[in-house]
Image (cartoon, rainbow, N blue to C red):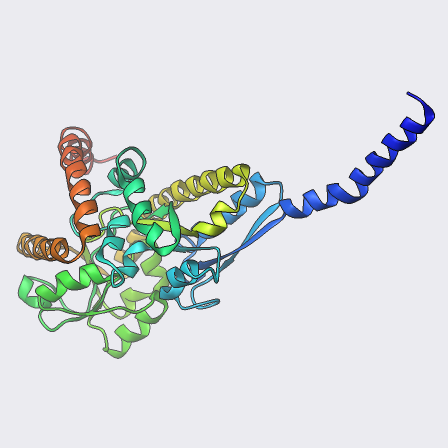
Length: 360
């Protein structure tokens, strides 16, 4: 190589080092905002978004950062889907059934009364048609979804009086997490209330609520519901395995590199499995502490469950008639569930039933 070629090539290398390389680095730096529907005090369900953001940062070597904002910080807890849809934020962390009022089909992405348990929900989403069908639906809102956690089967809520029969629901002002269970409870005579978790305690204390459901022992104990409503019922038949989701603005996701898209998917999987494991690890101790503080932990009677199942089926039929999206996705979910119930009856249920009666 002659002297002039050497100088020319050295000059090009210098330009690359000084000019283009910083530009490439700048393009690689991605900063998103995530709006949560949950308060920071609920470290497990809110914490799922923090686990996600931490995993994204670690896997990207710090080149992809996501700031997590608690409910009410950037927008109201129930306004996060609007925020993602219009691009105010790139993503949110929420429970899809909060947005049942937009279209009943939202609830199918999380939980319906007498629906799938957490493992069945995961199976439907990953190896059935669940994720495909839900993302086809979410595309109408300029977004797509990834699993962002699961609580496992929840408790059936806190009550200021005992629930001995379906008639005890009549006139009861009850905080419920989504519009679907609200429709079902209305058929049972209750008066549903939809308020964020941070406002439930004061409402129970003042008597403006007669009952409230939230999640389960760990989260419920942190919010102190046992101090103002002594009767704690189970199971939460309307939330057998509710999925918490990450909703991402479609344009924002499309703008990511293939590597960053893979990082988002992997980080969501980490956050999702971590949340369920954390609830399973923490709920037993919290339940024992609640019982020790004189909480009355009681099962719903067979009559209550039967009446609730009947009311749920009536609401599902009504949704079939008014939402084609619901009808299509619901039919697929129930077809999948039939085989799941059959399988779990032979193995999981029999094993769990036996072990629940043993002394360890």
